[in-house]
Length: 613
Image (cartoon, rainbow, N blue to C red; front, side, top):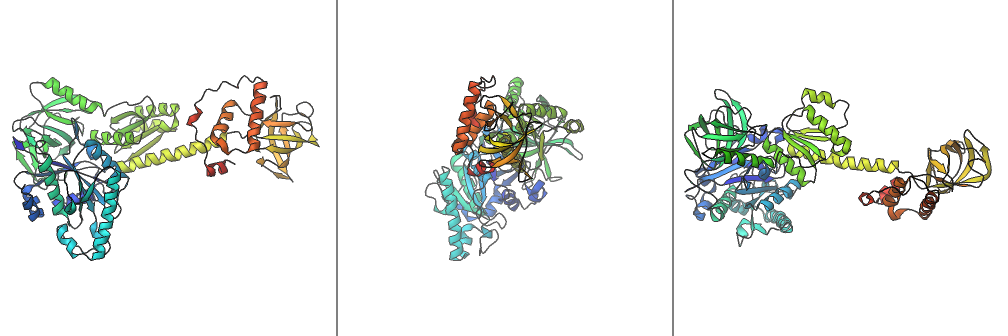
């Protein structure tokens, strides 16, 4: 049996220093090359033990584990999607994790989401409290251990750091984790280790790496054992053209051994399994990030997990990024079934009604689906590839079912020309971005504003309970339209309202209202106005002194009752009761037939009620 390097994933809120941390360890500049300055596709870097030893120094010697592990294998992931994007059968690809956060900002939305992922996956992790160098008055020493550098700080600065760390300890406690600063921990098995660091200056990195190795040695010995002749398993990062090599596959191996000339099986974009033979295995040299390596490759005959490798093989044109990779053996049918079952949970149609999700890779698609699922967003379909005409048509069908589901959320893909044509004149929304967190935030913000807009539109469409009285001796015109002086007895009456009498018979429609020559769009209780009533004739449809009511159907009646709740005034409630009795006595065929779950309607708060009136 051999022991492989632990696979370590770095999680945290955007801009809290995930890639900068790895940059400092390997001395690269990958962070500046990503969209939005944020890692958008997964990278992998092998950090051999001799490099870790040179960083950790005496700390590693005290642990007495220097010869027990070959090193650490870091995967750098988009935002907090570490455990959803890179996966293997049965769970996360990562053995360990670093939850990195800005010590000055504390927990942010993506920090909480990352913590929930760690909690559900039961993955051991260390908290890296980053950016200690930005604490006011901090005296930095590049690449120093935290134990050394804290001795050089003013007592007030050290106190400020402790206060920030106690806030982190408090938040972790609220989330169900006991934690403490690494040098104050009494029980590593039950407490989460917090290591103050600066990814920019390298301060605290000796303790951070030592704590990771200690966790791996203490709790993951069995998990890290691999058989020397076990066939390899891995995950495809990317399929790309390399000058002089043709199409290649960047892969992370998480188990077993991969040999030159092995037959491997992977998934294609149309969800089929292909088999091909390896021609070359190219391994990035130590500290080289697999995405960035150009000529810094070693041509090898064998690679042992955990490792990043570039595979040269024929027939890989349609292999999908994020696909599982398996070495084929005599039982190819079982491997094929395993591969298809691993992707079944991603390429899904989860709901009869929901939004359309598109992404450029299998990993990105899975990350996007998981984030939306966590936000309780129903998904109609989730697929890899550019937005097609079929996607637009499906989204428009969803729009007909419910406008809020007439949406396409698309990560790092384009809209095909035929889809652009189909999109013209459609009411569906298309959200595109090359930064996953920004894409989902934009969509959720639109959902929130759409709900507010729909609620406002619904309120504006509600007919308000109101009644008027024809003032005696103030009928100015008998018809076409009839004009009379009226008093608003209850509620608010608006231009365009339909009027009925106390028998439920149609009287006419409010054509206009005036007060002292000023035209009014609406009038409230207690007002006396001149009202023009279209379709009405005096002494035929109404008499002096008659009380007329604003007509409403039963659905409107229920909406008023449920949405306004107990905030209605007494005169409004009385008018609603009178109107209900009038409708029942008149045997209106459209009354008593509504069967709606009105519990879904929200009652108005005070501000909304004031806006309503």
